[in-house]
Length: 372
Image (cartoon, helix red, strand yellow):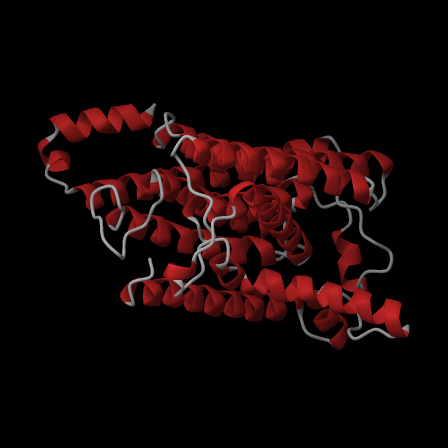
C-alpha cells in the first residue's frame, strides 16, 4: 500500500521527515486526490469505449425536455468510473486499520450497487424504468441500516458516540442511543436520493459534488488539528481518524474532478444511478462519521433545494391538481422556461458554491464560540 510506503519515507527521508503532522496529512490527502483524478482521466476513454461496444446507452424519458432527445444512446453507468477512481486511491493512501475508512468505502460501494442494478434494468429493458421504487428504496434502507447498526455497535465499545451534534448548542446535545440507527438511515437514504434527483444535466451533480467533497476535506483536516485525543478542551472534536476521512473526501473530490472532464457539456458519459447514489452515499457517510449530519443540509444546499422542488411539485399536484413548476426537478423547469443547459449548470454551481461557503462559515463560527 502507498500508505505504508509513505510512512516509511516519512520516517527515513529527510525532507518528508521534516514535515509536521498537519503538513504530512495534507501531503497525503493531496496525493490521494491527484491519484483519483488521474484514474478518472486515464480510464475514462477506455470505459466510454467499452460501454459503447456493449450498447449501454442512456434511455431518455419521453416526457422530458426536447433538448435531451439527442442525448439518447450516450454511454451511462459512468458511476463505475467514479467508484473505481474514488475507492482505489482510498485503499492505497488511507489506513485500512481504521473501521471508519471501511464504513465510508462500503457505504459508497453499496449505494452504488443499488444504482447499478437500477441502471442495468433500464438498459436491458430499453426503458427509463429500472428497479421498482419500493425495491430501490428498500435496498437503500438496508444499506442505511447496515451503516447505522455498525456505528451503534462501535458506540457501545467507545469508538463512536451517538449524540446529535446541534450547532451552537453544545450543552444541549441529546444522546440518541438506539435512536441513532433510524436517524442514520434517514441521513443516508435522503442524501443518496438528493444527489440522484440533482443528476440530469451535463456536469451538474458532478460539479456540485466536487465542492461538497472539498468542504469535507477541510472539515476533516480541521477536526484532526482540533481532535480531543491530543487537543482536549471545550472546542475539540470527538471524531476518530479524521485524517483518513480527509483522504476519503479527497478521493471523492478527485474522482469527480476527473469524471467532470468527460461529463461536462456535451457529455460523453453519464454517471447514471450507479454514480449519483454512490456519491450521495459517500457524502452521507462522511456526514455521519464526522458528526456533521445537520451541517450537510447546508453544505449540500443545492441538492436540498432541488429535492424540495420535487416534493412541492408532487404535493401541490396531489392536493390541488396544479403544478408549481413546469417540470420537476427544478433544473428541468428552467430548461422549459428557455434557459440554456450550460447556463443552468453554471448558475446552479454558483448556488452550490455559496451553500458550501455558508456551511464552512457556520462550521468555523461554531468552533470560534466554543461549540465544536
